Image 1 (spheres, rainbow, N blue to C red):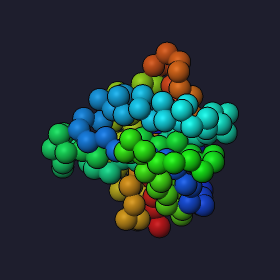
Image 2 (tube, one colour; image 1 turned 120 degrees about the vertical axis):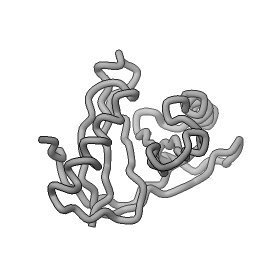
Image 3 (cartoon, one colour; image 1 turned 90 degrees about the vertical axis):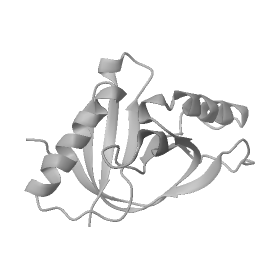
Image 4 (cartoon, rainbow, N blue to C red; image 1 turned 90 degrees about the horizontal axis):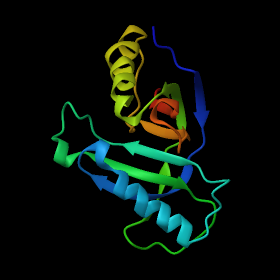
Length: 153
């Protein structure tokens, strides 16, 4: 049975965000542009956290219309350009799950969370999108670590 790693109340987090529309698994160009933005603006990579805001359910929304924001935490004030926006990850209570493995297999964790855990535990969801925090990146796909933050009441 899937269980959250922890239940946590977080403060809102300011992020620089770049929108991707389309297949979630094809957002690498968006990430490349956001990383270039961070690099060009000398954002502190050691302090910077990486997030994905996942707005749409691929079982409900057509693949070509799926919305996703690639995000890095705001470590300093910089000029916004090339489609990068300043946004906030909504503060509040989250059930946080740890996904181990490739981004392509994240769907399995989402299925377990939404298909089983939410219903079996009678959890009420908040009207906010799930968040992905990329904990371990730049490693082999099987060694990736991603936290899935599920907004709950």
